[in-house]
Structure formats: C-alpha cells, structure tokens
Length: 250
Image 1 (spheres, rainbow, N blue to C red):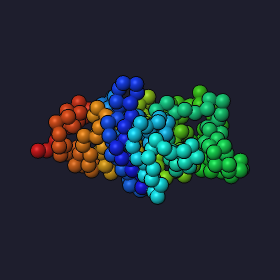
Image 2: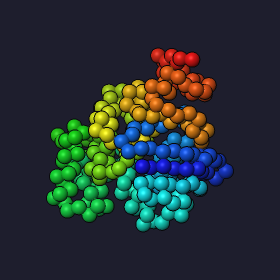
Image 3: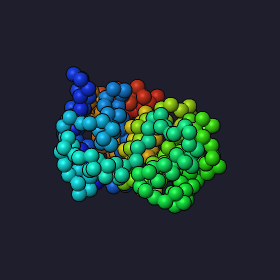
Image 4: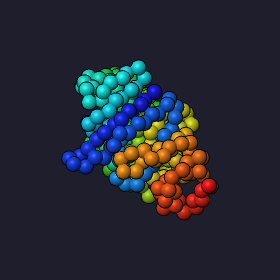
C-alpha cells in the first residue's frame, strides 16, 4: 500500500534519516518506537511531505516516484490519502470542535457545508465528543482536543493515518481517552502508523513494531515477537528502560 525506499534526510550537517526502507500494508497498525532523536517524527513528516526528503522513492498504491521529484499537484493528491494527528493538536482556536472537523471537508474536499456538517457530527460522535461540538479548543481538555483532532483526520476518509506521539502531552487519564479511540480505529481495520512511547498500546494493538535508532531501522517484527524475543542488544536496552515489567526470552 505505502512504501518508502532508501529515504535520506539531513538538517544542515546532521543526517537524521540514513537510508530508511519502510512499508505499511492496508489495515495494518505499525508502532514506530525508539528513543528521542532516533528519527521517528522526521520519517512521518517526510512521508506526509511536511518535510522534504533529500533522497528516496515513494510508492503509494499504483503511484511510484523519486520522492524528490514529486510535483506539488501530486503532493496534494497524496496528502488527500493521508491523515495526520499531531502531538500538539493543531486545532483552530477561533473555531468550535464542529467547525474544526468541517474545515478540511469544506476547504480541501470542496464538500457542501450541509454535507460536511453531517459528516463532522458523525465523526465527533464516533470519538465521544458530540456533546462538545460547540465548544472552542480553549474550553476543552487536552484529551478532548486530541479526540477532535482524530475526528478531523478520520472525517477525510484517509487511506492511512499518521500519529505523531498523540498522547505525549497528556496526563494518564487523558492519555487513556485518546488510546481508547485509537484502539477502536485499529479494531475497525484503519491503517495506522503511530509514533508512540506508550509501550502497552504498542504491545496490545500494533500488528508490527518498527524500532529506530540513530536514523536507521535496527529491528522490526510482530508485536509479540518484538517484546518477547528481541534480537539485538540495543532493543533489549530500550525495552528494559521503558518497561518496568519487561522480561524477554532467549
């Protein structure tokens, strides 16, 4: 479905991505794990063209091209297939929850306002926010704002949703609100790439774990295999550091 080959990205003299090969299949949930600075967020941002890669190839369904030669029109078309949920919500503070969800439908998809409103109401209900549809972001908790952001992403019916540490700014109770919505989407077969530090979510929900370190993918595999039979020492160190109940088999 979506594949990246030999992706490179540098910021000035620092190479952040060093030849990434990455693939997600339709209906698959991928958890991208790794320490801060390993390149996870940069990978998501290059896939979604929020950052320009220096080298690599992108394949999305039947579209295949050098990622550095993709035209603006093609980028717009590819972005229509992707949803992005940011760490910091990125809601319009002068618009209500309902208006935030409607915005992309009306401006990007050119859907009539009445139809966009119906879709937005359905999506807010789906994430448990229908009773807050007329609230502005400043009147919502962080978890509620993130659920509105997820409603905005799924309203566009994307083929894949990219999540960039969607719970990192939330306390445990609000984190659980957001993770329950994400679990619901996963159970519905939504294709998802999730950068996360929530190890239990990764272990329970992800189909496959991709572990990054210093700009490269050093290990990947099924969630059960990854957490129970890690192959390399850096993976074992990461899991010992992030999971207090961690025990692996050898």
